[in-house]
View 1: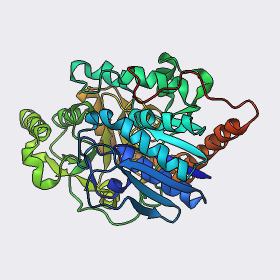
View 2 (view 1 turned 135 degrees about the vertical axis):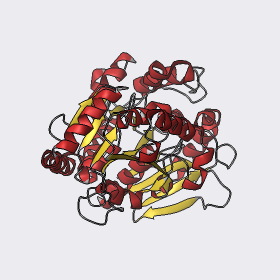
View 3 (view 1 turned 180 degrees about the vertical axis):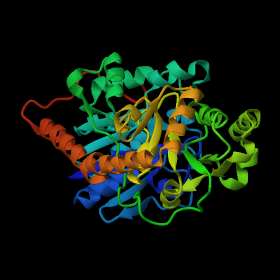
Length: 417
């Protein structure tokens, strides 16, 4: 198949560099990995992303059968993600021109603004389209309230998209419930999780410098909702032979200038554990497996999480995970089998779960081994790509069938929703 993927702010080319910034994270990794897995299966994949500089060529090869297309939409510079909505009309026009010249068999939009740009272009050309939101505005608004910086129309646009595309791919069971609340029909939502590169993330291989302490690792964008402060609070309730390593955020050289790092350092000082917390800054994908392998446990306790790749990466490396039972983490981490579920925002519960792993190394290793088996069996990218292929084939077949017709209520990117 010829597959057009649209990822307006999350370029797959950024996935190999240091992640952890405010707008660079799991979506970059997931889009890259899916494109590579589909290309490896023999498909032709073009990932359309917004141009953010004047020097990168329009098309950059990602691998045999996969290229990244840099679309001119708005100024060619880095912009905050929430400011991109005003440039989606231009993005849509460019997509339509591109697809008229190179017609794909199916379009897959990643994130709501990608769908906003992709849907009008796809419908104008009679192309089937599927949508992965990666995060929903309704969930973000519920948890962040006045701190939510998303454009006001986001939730309405997501609702319209859900009713207009051929299929919505939810990354976890919890997201299906959220989609139904937005008015998406039950038969329009299919759970297809993100995956993990089980060859790259594996238990054997080099490990970052070891320690005599019990090492807890957190890998995360440094924003308040990720719950890193909760892990620091847990550290304050654990003995002095436990340390915390935090990967993510700005590059190491810029850590001192980052307000969220300052807030977390203040929390560590207040807990009396500043000497046991290490901030690494942004870490590239190549360096992550060694980080996981050097950890005794991985903590991932966000307030909410649409899917969450970190627990999968940790499990693939054979490490037990202490995870908040939210979003995709409730699906990927099996409580008592591959790690422990804890309530959000509860440092006492996080401390208890980590201390149980510290006190029983044999059980911790067993949980890690079970996590590796689960990651390989359920979440390897080859398996996840096959699930995407099945959905692509279904919507493509329906689009070419005798009763094929555009769905009612198709959204245009200029909609006032």
